[in-house]
Image 1 (cartoon, rainbow, N blue to C red):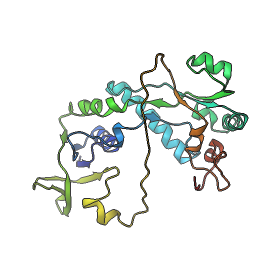
Image 2: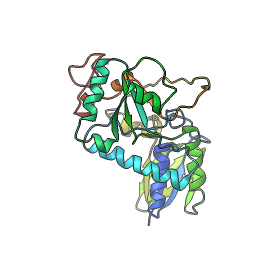
Image 3: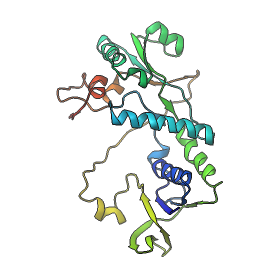
Image 4: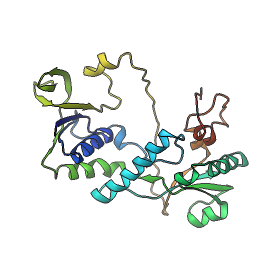
Length: 271
């Protein structure tokens, strides 16, 4: 087996470390901060199957969902919930899109069912208000970002083949016949047979020369937190705006960037 170095302590890097350990490799995971503190701990924690494009993307999402279920059982401290999702239709246009979604050939593999407003309210009593129905996806799930990395790290550290190396900011990578060598600003060096770089949005420093011509663009997501609710919500909840999250068709405008254009194939959009 090989020695693997993973650069990045976020969820992508940590999952590479998890799977490499599972394959029997020796793993050193490097993080420039004391703990990961970027997107991995600031996102929604959604394990989202429902809106993935048909074909390879959906197959990957279903495998990821299966893997998360295995990790949730095996690790037990990441806040995994097989809670499913409800996407609410507030008008006939949105309801029509949801009706098309449940009629697609792969609807069953996505875990889709269309609920009336009455069925939705029975399933999720907190959803008062005016809506026509909801798309229920029981394959969707969630993890808790504030618990996830700490829980996985604690689990990984139980393995003698795993080493966690925080406060190590890589400034240079060199390669020789003996392997790949990572150097930090203080002169420390970590060597391995294979290096996996999962640096998130950090494309500068030692990565600049490799990524300066890459077709990358930054995407900024504004998020907020509510005060604690006086009731419990059992599912992940989305509304019609979430249908515009996915890539729409060429003819889209702000009201027609809908689920069907993604599930049936997508191109680009200016919105």
